[in-house]
Length: 83
Image 1 (cartoon, rainbow, N blue to C red):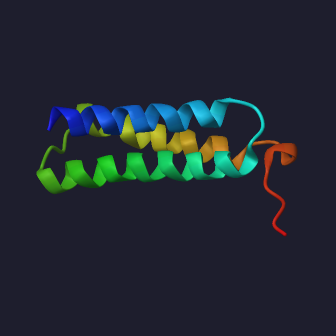
Image 2: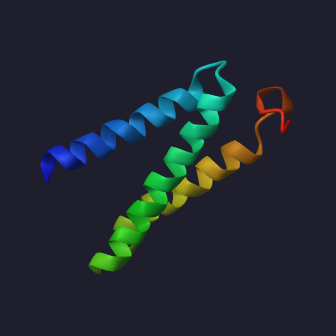
């Protein structure tokens, strides 16, 4: 269980690193998707396990909002051309 948790944490850290570094727009799109899936998966897992309290739910919900805002508000020069 601990190894799986460590692998998930390191995967999320790698996604955030890819979002921050310059260039590689397609890789950034996948990193944003990975961050979103990791965090929404964390929320759904907590809901399914019954660990519903403000302390455990706040972080993944807030960070999901930060990731979505970061993706939506990035400058046009950092967006993929839809063609």
